[in-house]
Picture 1 (cartoon, rainbow, N blue to C red):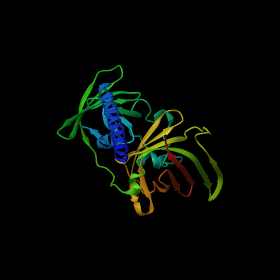
Picture 2 (tube, rainbow, N blue to C red):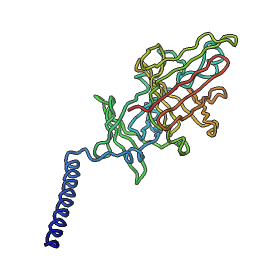
Picture 3 (cartoon, one colour):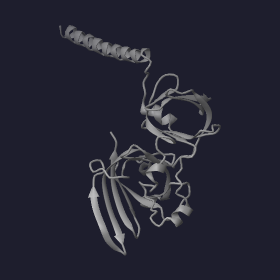
Picture 4 (cartoon, one colour):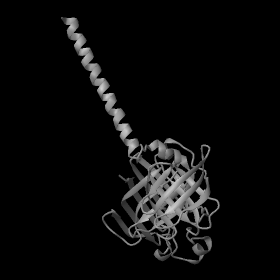
Amino acid sequence: MKKLFYDKVFYLMLLIVCAGTALVGCSDDDDDDDGKGQTTNATMEAISGKYNVKDSGEYDFIELTADGNYVIAKIGWQQNNNEENRANTPAYLAKTLHSKALKSTRSDKTLVFTGTYTIAKNNTLMLQGYGTLVIVYNGNTISSFKLTPTNSTAVLFKVEKGEEVASGQFTDNLFRKWKIISNHEIEYENGLPIRDEIYNPQEVIKEGDATHVLISKAGTYVVYYHDGSSDIAKWRWKDISKGIIQYTWDGEWYEEDFAVIELIHKDRMKVTEQNANYFSENILIPTE
């Protein structure tokens, strides 16, 4: 009788396992049938990177991030924050999270486009707010893009993937979109503080304030502002052992344009920058 009882238990467990396996199989089949497929972080990681456009008179580069964000930059996106302007404009002051470009000259909605993307079938990406992007391969290498803006004709152009920042535990934790939750700013005049303020830019809206920043492994970062505009800058390590980065808004690397990044932990970051005129400390957390 004991043997019969254990045999029944064994066969019952076997039926449960088989039934569970069948359900998983059905679920996968359903995903394939509805055309959505299964999008994973590994898929986005495989296509992530900055792709420089080689044969288009309109687009400069397209960047895809592993966390599902895209950046499209048309030719002429770089701000005119060059050395001549810096020398001739006493009020000029570039910051890590603010180019000091005038709102009217910021690369917003005409030269720079940002948003999220999802992966559909046949190597097609759905670009939220822009259109579709079809990835064309030459073997295992991405060689071309077919970009179709909404309500516009498709454009086919060759691309070449750019170099990336060397991988590492500290560096890799930066590659995502962050939300700025605290600004601490101090302004000085003749060595004395004339303003000392701490506030959350998500709650206190001030003209020209940044709200988010996207940091990419291709050395790009995008700053997003309250008014919906955005700026693109580049970054590189000045001294990784001390968390010091250099940044540039115009492609020229100036010795005085640097900031210190500290990962309080992987989900909280502090960016500090200071000189004789100001001190700033920003606290950021990953976007949801």
